[in-house]
Amino acid sequence: MPLGLANFAWDFQSIRTLAERDHKNIVSWNGYDRGSHFAAHDAPDLLVADLRQFFAKVR
Image (cartoon, rainbow, N blue to C red; front, side, top):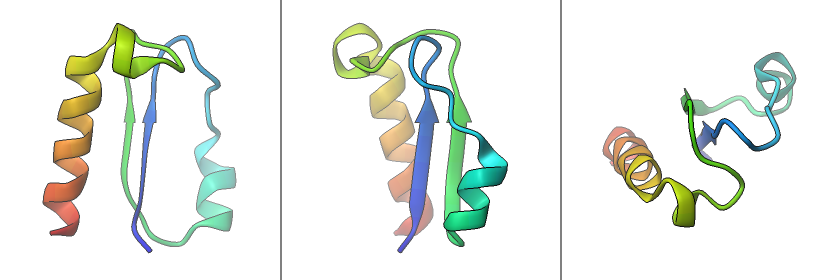
């Protein structure tokens, strides 16, 4: 299963080495300088762009 991750500035920061250990098919990993756990509310432009980029890769 393809996996994508969006790290927003004011949310828990995932550790890539641990994620790669547990998930073998990471196709998208992006970090952003704004946004939080509620990115749909405080950074919807970044979230939508990230989702579009992810699905374009797995299409």
